[in-house]
View (cartoon, protein in one colour):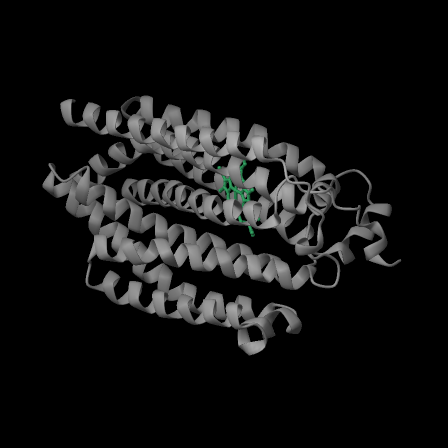
Length: 355
Ligand code: HEM
């Protein structure tokens, strides 16, 4: 069967594709940054439970207070890219979502349980005693399983050749496990996330928690250790991931596409620079370079998607019927939303200072 015959026709766009692509590439790395902070916080809190020293115990309690906020930010910052990716790739994403429907729907109960447990970990930290360690470990594993479901969907939507499996297995139980890139892609995502998450913990410890010197130092040490060692590992995993890509896609980064090649160069440069700063424990400078690094990696991931879909779909050819009013309305609401979030965060900082 020709997989191209299974791809539904793309709907016409309500604005030039560049708008949606711009908004997708603006918002998706924000989701990633929040997700990284969330996973890194959960992992660091878990490691703290394994250390008997007082500052590590106190640090895990501080991180427990931050975790529910980070879960909320990750989920909410996922909504915007979900909308834009649906607008641009809806005909592909809806199809792969149906193929793995059971797992996709499972994301909601998994998140509810993880969120509930994250709150229990925060509010009942002292009461839980030793079992708090298991609570945060379960939160971490549940959240990472959500990432695995996303990786499956994101790889299946760009591989229509895997779709005919549905005729033999129509129950919505398909995953993309036979794809040789899936596991290494997921490993690359999770290692990078936990590394950046460690950096976020170091930043949080050396700014918000700085009044308690021992706790701040414990957070900075643990966070920067996670960041540097996992980033070093990431250099190997990233190279491995590149090598597993289909040749045509890999060659985009080897000179066949100047933009993709430039992104790879920029990514390598930023990774080495962040590593050097990280080993010197320069938290703020490392963070300033890591944010563009996450953006560069997101653009590279998007280039991989374009490469995979080249035989099937070109978003620049989708017809657009320009409708200004929804776009303007969206942009106004977006700016208002950002103002409200910044205001809420400033209030939170104030509450923390007073308490
Ligand atoms: C809270 C747990 C979550 C984790 C750990 C997580 C993690 C991830 C990871 C690892 C990816 C990249 C997958 C890949 O390309 O291989 C991803 C992509 C994505 N996530 Fe999340 N996610 C979470 C929740 C959500 C939620 C609740 C939403 C939506 C409301 C969401 C929206 C998205 C979207 C739209 C993408 C793909 C964007 C694109 O392809 O351009 N995520 N997520």
